[in-house]
Length: 419
Image 1 (cartoon, rainbow, N blue to C red):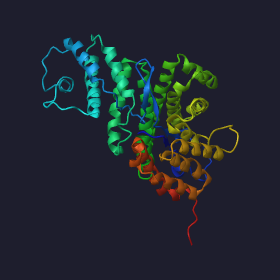
Image 2 (cartoon, rainbow, N blue to C red):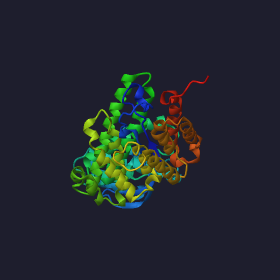
Image 3 (cartoon, one colour):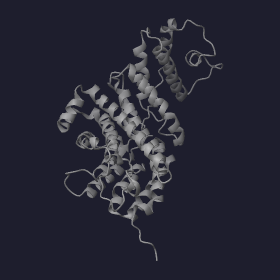
Image 4 (cartoon, rainbow, N blue to C red):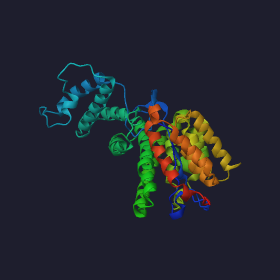
């Protein structure tokens, strides 16, 4: 889902106020905002070192990797021959993936080679995980972790959100199983924190918002599930920062502004994907988490300071909504939010629907400006998702939200009936 998908929830804490009723002055949860980036970052290997620049595709843990099948897969298989004494047979789901050759001598495409490499890694790693005595178990796990966390456009360019919704959980659970074996793998910790955040919002929270009018009980259950997913993502985010800077979490909770000073530009993706799910998890009905707002602010403000252009404006997209509820800040919150909106659109070159949707929800509803509300949402809908493959899936998801918001206009605004 490659896009600075400025993910934003309109609020669903209760009844009429489910989308920031114009008459309400109730606390606006931080979970109402999270920018969903698609950006170009740097791959992290099993030790967390930086690799070549990669396309970061709103990654749900599914990625494209360079073809390394010739250098890794054959040696891996040969070194594990002693683990599989039984002869190959068609009953094994892995043998044909790793060992079989095509009947015809055709030259595979780069995409086929990349897919085959990942499948070979999956098969080989699962085999090693089931064999406690495998001497290259850790190596295989880390290699597969690198492949899953590396980046690509497999999901980001898809035009079928429902298909991705069904596919994502497998990727996330596979990464969790690998983290159980390699708990400090920086790439996997990053991919799980970003993946659970995006899945929780796009495919759980948004479903809850859309069905609330028809089934309040089901919507409440879905929101509780989304909350748990965001807390899980936050946990992986903190572990990722801890892996990069030992002792970081303890220091963060003691003095957040001081603790984040240790972070550098390379930490920006992990700072963002820790702040985002933490913000989403904070709601008015979770008073124990409301006290964590200063931590969220410290993380996102440090990320902005280090790299404002991260993920084509994702941080600015987050702040479009957050500034409307930041406590103790100088100036008019609407002005601050508008500045972040303008910057997010500029960095994304107007190719992403997310900033427009974020601004409509965070600012236009609050100010009761129905004309601007309609205008910015129409701009979001005017984007041709097929013109920007890297953002296709994210744009489709946010355009769906834009249409839903337009359908709720009469609930969100005090519109005088026409004579």
